[in-house]
Amino acid sequence: MPGVGGRARKVASWPPGDPFPTPAQWSPDSAQLVIARGQFVGPWLETLTLASGVSRKLPLPQRPRTNTILDISWSPDGRWLAYGRSLSNFAATSELWLTRTSDGVSLQITDGTRREWSPTWPLDSRGLYFVSDRGGTADLWRCMINNNGQPEGAPQPVTAGIEMIRAVVCADGKRLAYTKGRNVRNIFRAPILTGHSAIWKDVTQLTFDEAEFESLDVSRDGRIIVSSDRSGNWDVWTLSASGGDLQQLTTDPAVDAGPRWMPDGSEVVFYSSRTGHREVWIMPIGGGPARQVTRGESESIYMALSPNGREIVKEGDGLSVVPAQGGEARRLTSDSRDIHPDWSPDGHWVAFDSSRGGPRCVWRVAASGGQPEPLTKGAGSLPRWSLDGKLVYRAIDPVGPTRTFQLYVAGRDHPLRQPARRFLKRVRADELEACTCPRPAQPA
Image (cartoon, helix red, strand yellow):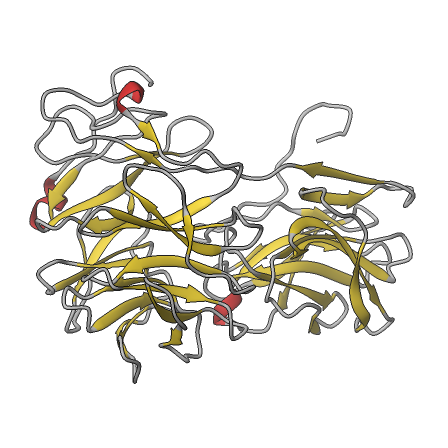
């Protein structure tokens, strides 16, 4: 549509079944658009000439560890496309790449040990500005690029302490526009009530940081293990279920995240980028050196423990099981869309979510191997088993312009908790297929 307003016209259709559409980016002469396709599985770049409607595919190197394309930027001279490659659009680390528009040659610019994104070009196309947390906070950095697309020297900082989100060089090349801030997520505890629905006044806030928390797990004796960037780096922390001070468990400069408790509570399993890629590590909860468990060809993230603690199921180019003491992995599934595994307390099943059959929903596969089967007809993700063998999962409800998330509890007609359209439904695995997820009568 015209920049001053007017009627919008459709220039292309998004191919059915292609996940996660990326925002289209203009070529310098405004004659073409570029998008990323094949996200999560085998991505490529595709340019579209607006006058003719002709598209051109630019194949990319196949890298199962970084199959998500982020933040495409076209160089002012039209020769290069800069972009980020990551495990997902929320991953804590990412790589910067260049692809030459004339022949599709791709070059890696940064090593992927930190999170680097939002590339933007100066007018002479000889350097690349980008946002990176390699200095602790998210700031602007610059890497000089020669005529062949190769980096010249190490990246240099441009700003310090900004906590930048996105950056773009203005059209005159003399100014830079940017957004700043940071994501903030804290830990809350909600009771499971039998007589009525819990509401916000029943919820207890456990942390009060200007930081992010994710991948929370609770031990059988009520201790919380969680990953957070509250120290400026992603590390593993412990916390009492009643709140109080957090205790830092890991201090390595690499990303340490996704922690899960060993069943006996004596050790914690997490993934770390200490080797340059995400691998599974185990560390005593009382302190001591961490030991590496996996040494695979694909990323190893979001683990779960078998009930006896002897095996670990992990996500990474499908689902695999490895001995907790280290050793050869055995494959459970080979579809890279299978994520977020969790082991049933009886040891028989591994639940996970996947978009292998269409919209993302909850599946299960026998822990000994076999054919996966869907458990939910509606959309669902992030399954977790309770100790009594029931399954908790998140249902996705497309309401309005953005998606909202709901959790439900089996056998109940009312939500467990009702902040921002979030509910809990817990059901046995054999009941999941028949369960429904009614919407609330009024928005929360």
